[in-house]
Length: 250
Image (cartoon, rainbow, N blue to C red; front, top):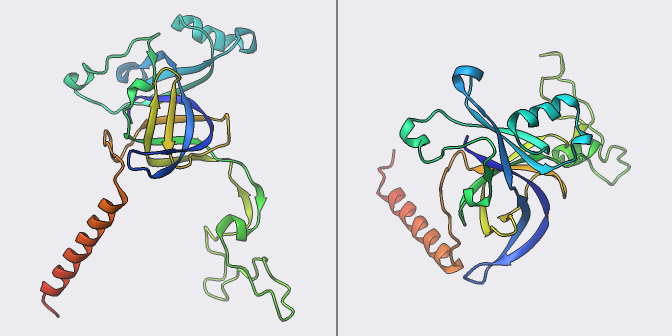
């Protein structure tokens, strides 16, 4: 992983790109975050950076929590999280030197960069299989009495039990979810705002973690005109058809 920011989901809106295309975006107040501690592989067994977000009155914290912030020499924060860092060489670390007390802002990211967003999904309570697992459901006519019921889950004599992992009604939501490869469409540094294309986990005013995409780190994906996308898809389809014709038949 890489260094990231903590933020709050503010809600959804829409913006237009340079080609006039409309994009649904989620507004996130990202940072500023303060570095509280640097984890060292020799001392802690792993490398990470611990950051704090959103100031809070010390009276609302326990004594051990107050002692942690006094040791770091910083103000008290409501949220404290860690970002694991991958082992890198000395030459790579020279560009990203961090110090305790340093502030991290949205300047960590660039416009149109791909990021991963982690948050706690909205809790739905106990739900049936139709809502939880998108079951089709049973017939609704001719006297059917099992419209949304799970029905029989047995498997006769062999194996004579319910297979592990079988989809059934149960608790839905309220779990840690990461959505990968989302694009930053707007970056407002003075107001600490990120407008991220698409939806992200959690409800409004809930905490989220933003970091560079793990699978596509540093990738800048600029918007394209609809006509350009259509032309690229047509060219790919023509190439695939030509390769299919050229391949020997078995």
